[in-house]
Length: 346
Image (tube, rainbow, N blue to C red):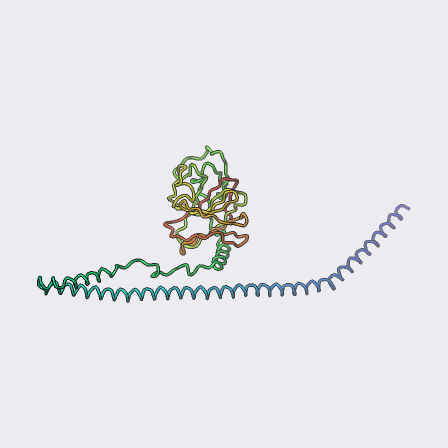
């Protein structure tokens, strides 16, 4: 009796399961027949619209780049022509001046050679006039008008596009690591040599070598750059007091003076933050920077061919500061932190 009841119970379960499977199969069949075709059509339509949007936007960017290229090349050509004409004008002017000086000199030599004392005295006024005329011809002076003005190529649009492209293509390719021999006793270096953490108490474990900063919380990278284009990024979101930039290898390491303090000497060029204040510093000159927000990451671009150092915020695509100078030697990435941590992004 119990076996019959158990068997009947199982039959009912099987029937219920079959009904559920039939309903599930019907649902799947309907999904495949009705829903998926619509999904496929919408995917095709959405992909087509996305493709058109990409083409449209890149076309607009391309058009803008072409217009900017034409404008800048025209400015370069115009500036070249202006400098060329200025040089030609100077050539004509000084050729004329040389002719006048030669004529005056010949006249004076002729008087000196052929006139007796009485005749020379009679020519005193003429000698005075010739001498005065010669003195009126001044020596050549250096003039900016004779130089090509490289500022004619300055373009915020080009700088921003170039920075985005350069940082996007080069960032992460530079294996920038910190030289542990230079790390201040106020800093702790991570095992991968990419993160610096501030510690208000000086570490006694650091050997005081010649390379080490002994007062300011500074550190140099292991590699220096002396040619080409270089880019690296630093994560600064955890710190309210830091400096990042480049420095010459001759940067002094010892003492509390300005010589070893980043941005306060001729050996270092840095972007710095202290609380809510930002600035670019070099050789004791501090240029305040107005930022709308605190950057979480900083991109540093160093173009040694153009002699240009650029600080960039990747998140917003904003160029924070550009510095152009004739850098006198190989440059090391340099770092300082006086609050929490900063890290080189790789």
